[in-house]
Image (tube, rainbow, N blue to C red; front, side, top):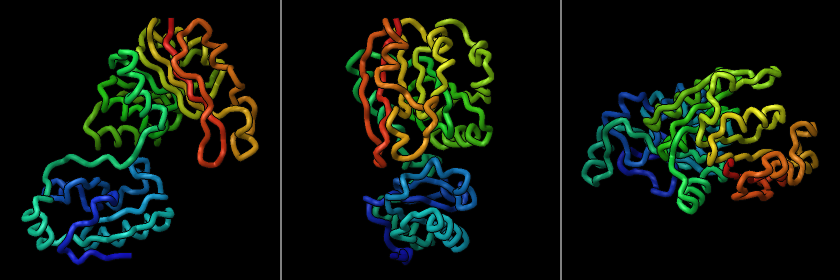
Length: 284
C-alpha cells in the first residue's frame, strides 16, 4: 500500500475514487477522478469497477480512512491513498492535472453485450437511438450506458433500492432516465401502461420470466431491437440459478421470436464457467 504525501497524483492507469464531499470535489479534484463520498460508498458500489481492479483513493483526513476501510472490507486492493491538501491542489494546478466542476469519471462498465451493441451493432445496422426499456434493470448500469449514447431509457424493477441507485448513477453521469417500480411476475401484463410498439429497444439481462415474452413483442416497435442476455441450461453445474424456470434452452429465444431478423444468437461464458445467451434481434 502506498500512501500519497499530498504532492503527487496517482499513476494514470489506476481508477481513482475521490471520497470527499461532492462540494469539495467540484471545487477541485485530480483529473479523471470519480466522485463518490465515503459515506455513500455502500449505496453506490454499482459505480465502482470490479474488485479485481486495484484502486487509488483520494480524500481528506476524515474521508480517506473511512473509504479505505470500507473498500478493503469489500475485497478491493487500495493500491494508493492520496491525502488531499492545499499543497497537492497547487501541485496539480501547476501540472495541468487539476479539474473543477461536477464531471465525475465513469469507472464502471455495462454488460459486455450492451457495450458491443453500441460499438458494433448500432453503426453496422444503422440503428438510431430512440426510446428504450430495460426490464429488470437493477442498479441501472446498462440503461445509464445506453442513455449516455442518446437512448431515452426507462427501467423497471421490483426493488426500490435498486431504482434509487440507478437514479444516483444517472445523476453522476448527468443523464436522465425514468424508473418504474413494478412487480413483473403477478400474472398480469406489467407493460399495460405502454402503447403498442412504444419502444425502439428492449433489453433484458440476467432475468428470465417466460410469460413476459408475448407482452415484450406487443410493446416493441416494428424494426425495434431486443437484446437478451441471461443464463442458459448448464449454468446449474457451476452455481445459481439451478431452477430450470430461470435457464434458457439452446435456440429458445430464436424460436420464441421466430420471424424476427436475428442479428446475434450465440452462447457466451462468464468467468466462472456459466453459459449465458447473447441474443440480439430486430422485430418485424
